[in-house]
Amino acid sequence: MPFTEPERADLETYAARIRACRLCRDAPGSGRLPHEPRPVLCVSTTARLLVASQAPGVRAHLTGLPFNDPSGDRLRAWMNVSREIFYDESLVAIAPMGFCFPGQNAAKADLPPRPECRQTWHDGLFRRMPQIEWILAIGRYAQDYHFARLGRPLPSGASTAEIVGAWRAEAGMHPRIIALPHPSWRNNGWIKRNPWFEADVLPMLREEVGRAIR
Image 1 (cartoon, rainbow, N blue to C red):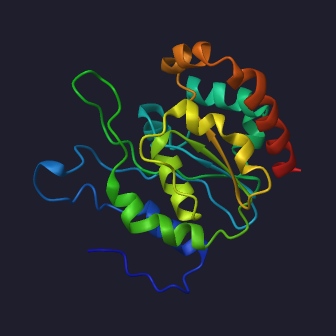
Image 2: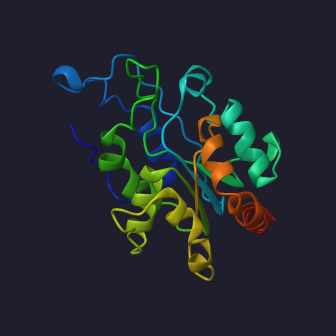
Image 3: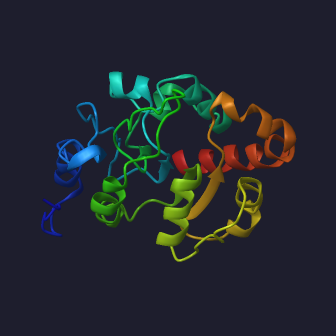
């Protein structure tokens, strides 16, 4: 059944309902999640910075801690923050587009985020966090959702380089969205082909993250 929690439910209650969600496990037919769900998110009414990612990987599923892997190490290096800061939910909210590990395909690559999460939970979640002023949108699923949610939809054919490279257009916007490629080492080639990312985007990112968590 779709979620029907009254709009007056506070963030803590709403997040508890997300963590108890089993919609993907109970989906009919072949679309059912093949393992027990474990929704992963870190939210609060005080964090001004949101890390909006794709979906938890295997290690996050096993530990219940988002970005608890080499991709997380790289993301924290990009942001110039410690693990202690990164996992302080009073400072940093983390909400992926799919709250549960979606499984893997035959090539052992992670599947896309489950659509049930966005359809059921996301709009209500972000209505309960109006204090968010900075959004790190990691990957196209998060970028499409958050830019559209804030009335700034992306062109359907835009490339990662075009979206990430348009960071100056977001200066002065509220909330400010900073689009990032996924920090997976699979993206090493993209980073090498786009040296402006490390030269121009990362210094801006670190400055904005510092401002958000001060």
